[in-house]
Length: 580
Image 1 (spheres, rainbow, N blue to C red):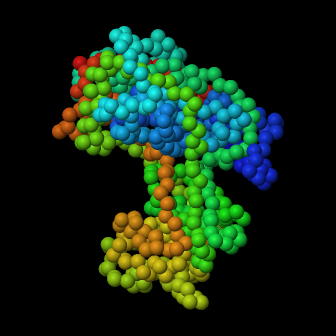
Image 2: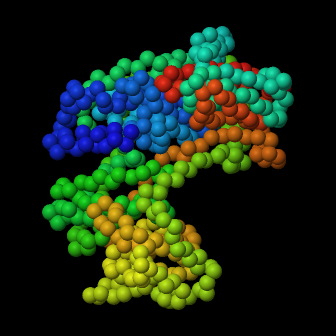
Image 3: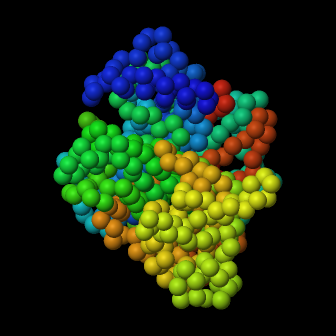
């Protein structure tokens, strides 16, 4: 797969030199080997209230390889629309074709039908992009706001009108030969407030990956024909490609442009791009003749601050940076109307109370987040000094001189340099000359004298790496990381050639599994969603135990399973349990 990604990069750069803003077709021989990605997004249920959490599980497959999971793109982009506007965007990390995350829907969303779009940048390189869209009803039980011209009122009394799960029940069993449910002696009946478990069995020889959801059957939840089988079961191969976008092969490709009063002065200039609080997320690149740049980043998560600095452009005036929008933002052309019926009123009331209690009591603490850690830069073990373990000095230079023998300060031609002590294979000691990378809370400090001005009482630790590192076009001998208690990189934001920007990283991969010991005893348990696992992997001819705690809500609950096998066969099945 690494060889395949290399060929993808080579193919893009072979044509990019002649693009000049125009799309260049790839020849037919190459078309047959280029990945044609298709996405499916599973959600924990089919409809939501404004203020609830929408849980996501993503599948990215290759239509040119029998629908097997794709390892090409590592970023999927999500756009959530109503008929009036784009209401939110998000990104998810894809690892070998699988991704996960959660989005808290704003409480101000008006009632209406929304469409969730999902895509990779590489999908838009196809002549006819096949973009995933899913209609999701959203109800606002706190206000009467509705999406304009998107909501109609029905006076039908037929219960199947609003109970979408029952409406499509006969067409939902797609996996008799792939997965099965095995219940214990108690069967499918369990008391409220008790642990419940069952086995999810993989009946095939192939490994499978699934998402599992357990939720209350009510008149709001809607499940129809837009499931994983109907979406990924019959895939059309790619119809040809034109290179419009760089594929996100190892993480997001962040691009933009730098403007100034004298553009000729910035051609080939060094630009530093770093993520605050992440010492390994430091990147160096060169500006092209138009001031454009591209930064190839590994995945990083959450809403972050990024710092862009131009260490050698102190004399350039009017300097500013414009980051390109990460999202393509093509709105859907059709929104079906949401039909309201009074039969859903009781379900809306119950879920509204549940949502408000969750917000008031901070029940997001029961969610579990999986933060993948990939260190693309710092791989060796550092020498770490926890400053609270030593006598505190009022000046940073004293701290370094008194008890950190691996570092020293030197002046050369009027400039101050921090140097790292190196040890060669003969154990001979020497100090690096001028090429030490200094980071303050993950932000490069190119003028080392600035570190001397930092209050050492704000520094929690100093970590020293003694290897040689190459970052983009620059090489460094040794890395020194100063971490503060607050992580706010004091003294950096005032530089005229330094820019701090807000940037949306990936959604944290997350799941929700509550057992008896997890839920706070002093709070009412009104959960209608009992369990959500976006990535449940089961080996061939094996099973996986699913355990969760039922809430105080009684009635019918649905166990919903969607997934795909290693050879590209999607499946979809469900079972029902009764909480007494």
